[in-house]
Image (cartoon, rainbow over all chains, first blue to last red; front, side, top):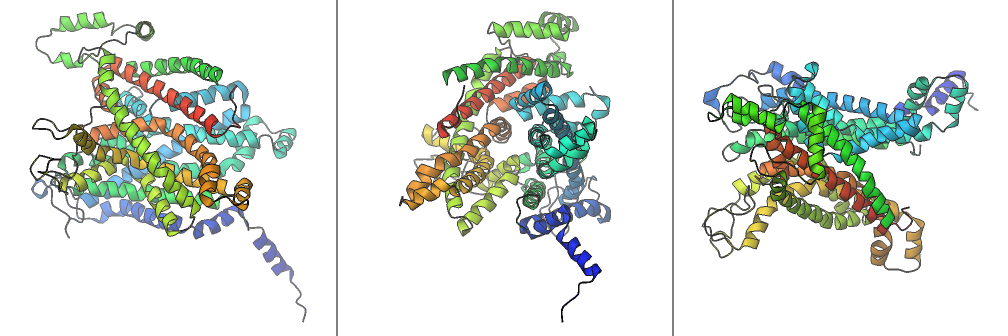
Length: 305
Length: 335
């Protein structure tokens, strides 16, 4: 018997054939095993950072001087530090700050980089030249040196709303790391603005800002998403590094970086104070990097379906 | 080529000028007073401090201060440190060679290891070796470098003993750490063979500094090689009967190295970051450490000196990378 396709199944088939780009990307992403593992590990870490400080009996900030430098045990899974604070609980509490700094710095860096890159690529000429020379100059000053000068300046209260808490470090990380994104976005804008559909939109009367945001940006978004993901890991490492040098988030607030600050002098008798906070950084960053890797594959337009 | 190099060198002058203006302003806005160390000195009266501030021109407006500084630089006078009162160039001259010595050894070592590993990994794609190399390289890129330094100290300096302690090579009686956790040479007490001692002190800081570059370079070498191996001219070379060795080393390698050169050029500024952490952890008397201490003390003449010298070095090494391009890829012409 010859099958007669009902209109419903035909529609369903058509819908199946024209999957959205997001669902195609997701299908590819799901197959990238390290990336999925990264999602799992990262979810656990985020969950732990949110829940552990709430449900635990230990106060991450309270000192118990009699319990100082206890090695890892059933009571203190990762041991205690020089002030008797539980390292596991403190790492989870510090994780909130570290993850927040990483995320905020990434958002700010990507916003700055995308804006500068979009303007440079779209307008070209003098604007392009000026903005890209600025990026070149920023890339010629060693980042960490610039960051140290900037952090001191902000912490002294030169810009009042950027002087305390995580604000100065987020700002400094962003201001020293937007350049690669700007170059990437500029290149996409340069090539996309030549396409016919942009000419069509312009002929239909679209203004420049509309072309930049509504027409070009959605077509340039894939590499930005990948760069953004990788930027989180880099930002977490930079925060940790600056805090390790004593230039980041200040104690008593914990971050993975400033927990490592005293660890070096305690390495002979309490190596766990150096090992565990760093392990958290490592697992977070490697998860984020694998997710970025997976996204790069998934968003690659050269997939054969 | 010569004309290209000269043009690039001329282009560097305005860049360095703009950098000096930006950085000088940033340092001057920040409220660290270079004389603050003297404020607690009972032998210096407040009047003396005022007189010194006058003399150094610390209260001059920013443009005046900058033009004074620039005027001196142009004449080759980099000023004196506010803390040690020695010339800035002497201060930097003592530290820069230590930083370069450490960074260059790590840099060369990373390249020497990365190139063959990346090559073999690409040629034997999806083999066990390839999987191991890519996974380890990925881990190396995700590890916080300073934490890796701490782990190296825990393993090799705190927990492992040197089996050669008490022998002719290391006269120090046991217990002696496998590798020292700091310094450039052994201080005091009958030093062993100076060369052995130097290398022995280099092992951990160089490993720490090399790991990130190594991971990065392996990945780029492998990716570059994989791209090139798909090319028609490689198939031609294989088809005409060349041995695999010759195809890979003579035909593929040079083109595959181009992306590696790009990433090396981009990573040069990061070498200074790595050096600061390595010098901090291994108490290495280098330029990064000098910068950090000077920043804490507001010693701006030294800060400006270090920033200008490192920016110049970065520009110089970028130029070297561009020249290396021309060598690797004759299609690139500079004019």
